[in-house]
Length: 326
Image (tube, rainbow, N blue to C red; front, side, top):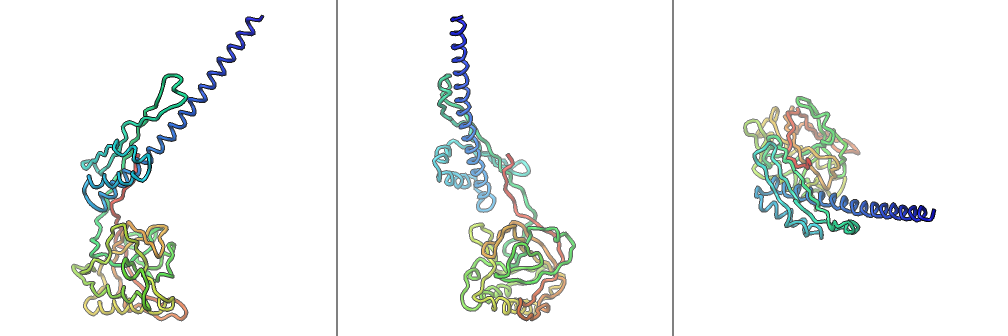
């Protein structure tokens, strides 16, 4: 009887010890799992940073990897792992990919040490895919106008549509019947009565060649570092009254040299979440003028003057895109 009681106590202690060890090792496993997800986030970010720099800034793999490693220097874990990362560029497959691997990371344990396992070996791998876009226009030929493209259902090929000009204070990313000016220079910081006065002068550099509207000045540089904006003005009344008239007059001057009916141009499609002070775009749209736009200017009392583009949609194109696929 006494022996049986002692055996039960010993069995209970054994079961209790096993449960304690099991629970403790689960704690180690949880910590290791959390560390893996952190490491995966770091390899994801390194792959995206390097691939974007290579695609959008400079086709140099060494510089791209350096940019990614500089980003890792911002955190303790990043500094710890950056020299262990392996960058593998694949330019033979379609689409191209960049794989960033962390072959081995030593995660120290606490409870596992009681069963002679001092550490766990973790590894992480991320693959960034460079998705090729269409035939994007040169920025030197990109007109400084854009429309909202968050919902593209109305922008199917062959559709005829009219867009009315709106200014900085009239911008909303859900308005699909308006077009807006785009600027990265003086037009983003108002001075004087209206910065459309600066902006409208850009149109004088336009010319028509082979049925396409081009210009001799690089109006938009898509460098992804400078915010694009709808040109601002000092007073809303100037934006409502003068700006459409100024743009209309600029097109009238252009039309003295060219008949724009049937001429094509490239415009920007704004991404969801764009604001008047931060226009985000990765896509472009090719359109064809259905009429000379200068004749469309109309004075409207207590509201924005009307100035319209009547256009036919030719096609939309997208820049190279970068995304993590695993």
